Image (cartoon, rainbow, N blue to C red; front, side, top):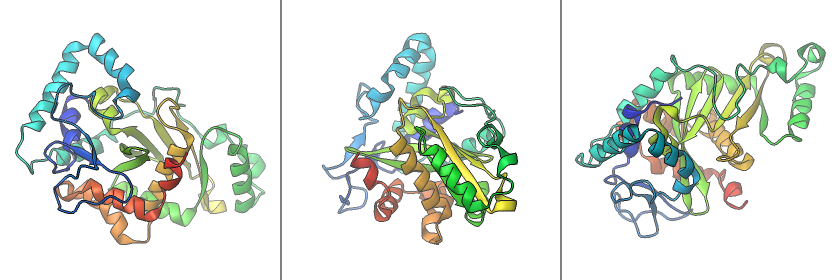
Length: 302
């Protein structure tokens, strides 16, 4: 799903002008001086050896990283060298513009087959008997959909057709975004990328370490089959439960509604900035918007 060497260098700084640190913080803590990282911050260190082990989420991906080191030592070495090249760049130089451009190109290249047990060519007809629901109203179908998935270890939603038109219309011009998933010790960042009506997520550290071999860890499927006649779009998801829980998947799905479906233009402007003015993007603005919405509070209390 994701590229290797180009992206290894591109995602490291993500326009975070903290001289190589991707800073995260606990809820409610705000910097007193812009650009100064307070002692309360947790940080993904890009400065010291060992390289990746200092990341607080390293243990989550340790097995995959170890396999890459042992099976493809030269490839691993190249990626680490790319990280060092980025770290030596002067403050203010960011590879995020190249990252965004590269991610957009992948929309035309990536197939639908995914690792980690994801379904290829997942259709609404494989879930729902479309013939049997033709005579039912949109509200009846919505109730059936939510009841069915309430017994499953996944998430689901029924999206008004008009709302999905806004979300998907914006996704066409802004297919990629950086999401912040609240954790007890801070935030873990995920990259979300639209591919048709599917929205693929993988963690930032997963992209950094696995490159082109980094699989999707969560896929949101949006079915528009009934949008014209019933006025609804049905959504469900598949996830790699080793890395993403149901509650975390729900938080990321809610953020899609927050950032792509918001009537507040200032919120969607973050998405536009990430895609079209990456040098001006501030990852802390995503966290601030998330905290203001209250979406992440349920995740950290689980």
